[in-house]
Image (spheres, one colour):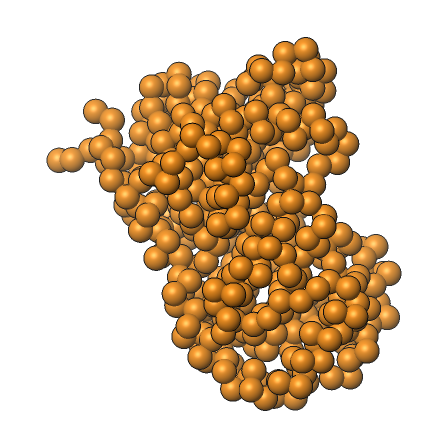
Length: 408
């Protein structure tokens, strides 16, 4: 009997906050022997995490606590990070120091993996904090590792030690990615940034896996009437996402639309921005499957980004723009470089526009003026979106993960 390939999926997050990792586990759990190592959080993700776990019946799930209990591992990692940050200034080429200074959970992953069975054929790191532990584990055990670049980490917004942290992130990617079995990236422009940073990488080992979802998670769109029904979702409903600018623009049309926000609502944002706006309704976070079914009730999905916030926001393609498309919604997207390219490729999907109050108002006026035709084309958009199904993307991953011979 042929050996079954064993794959370890690694992250410093959890399933709820890493949909790409969850999609891979869900898809591959019946094709290879899957193990997951991530972190547990005592927050809004807890209940959703339990629901996601139920759908992964053939996956070995392992969690490390992200909080202060047990106390000493947390204390150790918390004290190690600033020490590594100080030492890095004198040993900037040291990979371990770069990794520990960048993310304190790297230490906890390293500690756990040092005691882990070593017979995995492949270790896949799904965010930057997991990259060095995956590399170190693979090197020690003479196996392979891979990396999923969902965001361009050196270009993300960084609080505090921005210049040095960007250097650390670039160093980790430049030194480690050329040794990876493969690298997947989540948008064409992230791939372009990756090849600029690591020109020695080739298309043979690096490839695009977009953020589309399984098509069966979406149901045919509901027929809508009356006011324009608008939706936006994210992990958090808070400042810094463009919502305060959007709400100011929407106030002018409050009698013509309803806005639904889905995510973990921060209290100060609720008090300051939502209490006085009766046309806005907030919803608690939903599981991925619940959310995708619920989206069919809306006309317009908002993929708003602040392109001047950081480089990554300008070149990434988020989960939401794919979810809106696959639900058949018309999309109003901020004119980031990545979203402009995406809408140009799929012009049936919607329009892009600027993020000023005036520009958002002009975009909304166009939507309201064209609402009858937008609703009439809802099912056509739903059918067109089948080309975005994640299963089509998974074929490339399957060749990489399953196509190579397992360890003897």
